[in-house]
Structure formats: structure tokens, C-alpha cells
Image (cartoon, rainbow, N blue to C red; front, side):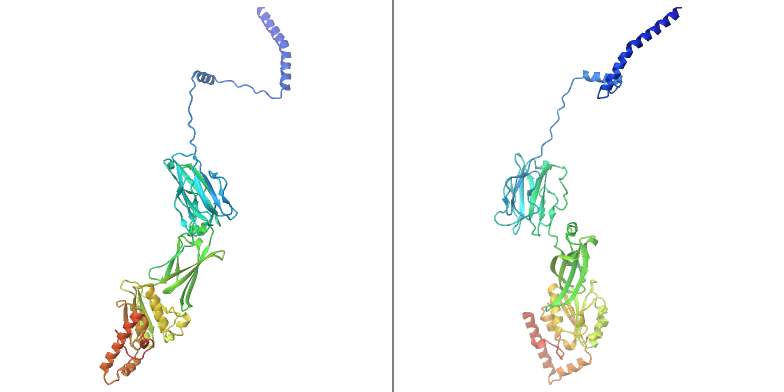
Length: 500
């Protein structure tokens, strides 16, 4: 009975609660529906978070001092611009001073570090027609005014106790090149040798070791067309040295170089060779060219881009050996003797090749298109002329040219015995010293017999011999003094001369 009563009481309580709470629930639903923001249900707090919060509240607060970042010093600068004069205000911290796109040159600059203690700045300019000026500092004028001279390059550096704490960067806008790379701490920015003006500049200071403000490659562009030629040993090859080949390629100045070497005699080109070097194919800063002959060469270097000449340069190079075999020969028998001896006389005691310079007054004796290696037709005659003619004067002048290139060279002269007067023209009048020449007289055969008999078919052959020797020595002495061949020995002589 008591159980039934309790159950009834519980049922009645639940019924009454439902009646009382239903209006409140309806009101709550209406309130949520009329609100423009939806409520976000609360998440249950982790007891450990509450404990940490309480602990934090219990800890006393500590003030942490944050050291302010050190300010980089300011750098200010201004330019004197052609057609404008001094800029009205200083520019600073990487802004552009000068102009671009107007073809106006900078003629002078001033640079300073305002409000910087224990820090200074020095700078200098490379000026047209004057070169590098001396260093100036802290706002002084570098360059010129009133002369119309352009600045072509600059160098700047920090000074003072704090200079080691910073890096100074600067770059220039050069005519025909545009903006170059960033230079730093005294290195060169700009160009030299080009006659290109600096038209604008930027300068900025950063903390030591911080990144540069931009690309540092190509800040300075030296004159790139300063190639040089050098002979390869004692060969007829030459090395073309191109020290700025990477700059040429990087700047797109040229894609190839055409090399033309020519050897001239009395205003006529008698030898000419040509080759083209593709710069993109070069793995180094040099390339070999074959000039094919010994002698003084004029070389033309044409820098090409897409087949067009962008620059042309002219140089000279002497291709020489330390020893030569000279063979201005006549008739047939001496030619046979020399040809048979050629391979025995073409190597020096040091193992180097001795080049043979050959000219025949009966040129058909040789196939001039198939000369053996180390034998050269007289370069002061064209290939066609060597095959059809001869010139002893040209041969002697060629010997003079070889001696001028290398005054220590030795000359081994091989001639017909009946043309021994050529010694005066080839050796004496060219003032080749004793000890630097040797003479080999090759028998002309029957002609030698005939001319010898004619020379000494006299009553007193000994007196004739003494007369010939005296005449020879007198002419020799005069030729070494004057450099002019004596008239008595200037041409072909049909007499047997006594070698001295």
C-alpha cells in the first residue's frame, strides 16, 4: 500500500513539473528564433586546464625587456647631371640618383652619412679622359663640373670604428648596358675602356653579413675587346686569348669572332687565312688559330652578333722560329741535293723542327701543292707566284723580316755556288751577326766548272784570288755598316766567290 502511494506521488509530481515548464520552453524557442546570431554551445572545461589557470593566476608577473633592433645608418647622395646640374635634394638609402632613359651622364657626385658617429664614407670616380681620381670623403665632390666629362665607374667604402659592422652596396646604370650588378665595400661599379657614362646610381647600407639588395654579378664591366695573340711554341699556330669571353657572352655583346691573318709584301697581301670562333663552343678563354706560315702577320678580329660586326680590332703578331733553313736555289742539281738532305737537316739538336723556306728560279721542279711538312714556299710571293716565278730581293727582304721578329734566330743559307753573291743580300746587308748564320754552297755541276774556269783563266790566278777576297771583304764591311747591298753583289753573278 505504501508502495502504491509513493508511486502515485511521483506520477503527480512529474505531471505538475511538465505543466509548469512547458510555457518556459516555448518562450525560449521563440527567443532563439528571433536572435540574428546563433549561440555556440559551451564546451566542458578540462579540470587540468582549470588547475593550470589557477596556477598561472597565482604566479607573479615578470617584465621581459626586448632589445630594440639597431637601426642601419642612413646614406645620402646626390649627382651633378649633364644638362641639369646638381640635383636639388639628396637621395638616400637605395633610391635612385640621376636619370635613366634620357642619355644624361653623371659628371660629379657627393655622398655622406648624416648623423652617424664613428662612421664615415670615402669614394672616388673614374672620369672620362682622366681615369681614376683620388679618394674624397663625407660629402666632398668627386668628379668634375663644367668640363662635360662623364663618370664611368665609382668605388665607395665605409671608414671609421663601426665600418666593420656594415656592408656598403652600390650599383650604377651605365649607358648601353643599363643597370649593372651591385658592388660592395670598395669594389668597382661601372665600366672602363668603353667610354660609357654612368647615368644613375643607388647606394644602401646593410648590417654585416645581411643579404645584398640584389644580384651582385656583373657590377663592373671592363673593356671586353682586349684579346691578345701569342705564338704556340715555334709552330705556325697562334693562341687567341679572350679574357672577358664570359662577359661577352653574358652581356650578349657578340656570339662569334672572325679572325683573319694576312702577310703583306710591298703593299700586296701574299698570304691570308681566316677562321671563325663560335664563343658558345669555347670551354675556356682561348682558342688556337692556324696561320700556316712564318713571318709578320696583321690580324683583324671581327666580333660578330648574328653575322653583323659589332666591333673590329687590329693586332700584329710575328710567327718565328729559333732557326731557319733558307733555300733560294737555282738550276736542277742543287735542288736535288737539298731535297735529298731535307729530312736530315729539318730537326735541331734540341729536337725542334727547323722550317725550310724555299724558292726556285726554276719553280717547275717542285709540286708546290704537295710540299712536305716543314717546307714553305717563300711567303713574300703568293702561292701562284711561287709556282711560276722567283725574286731574290723578296727573299732577302723576308729574311730581314724574320730577323726583326727574332734577333736571336739562326739562319742556315743553302745556295748555288755560282750565286754566292746572294750572301751579301741575304746575310750581310741584313746585318745578321757572325755566329747566327751558316752557309752551304751546293755545286751547280757543269756551270760551276765553266764559271770557275772563266774566273781564273788569267795570267796570275793567285792575284785574281786575292783581288776577289779583298773586294768581297770590303763590300761585306760596308754592308754591315749601311744595311745596303753593294752594287757589285746586288744581283746574280756568274763567278765563283770565295766564302768568308
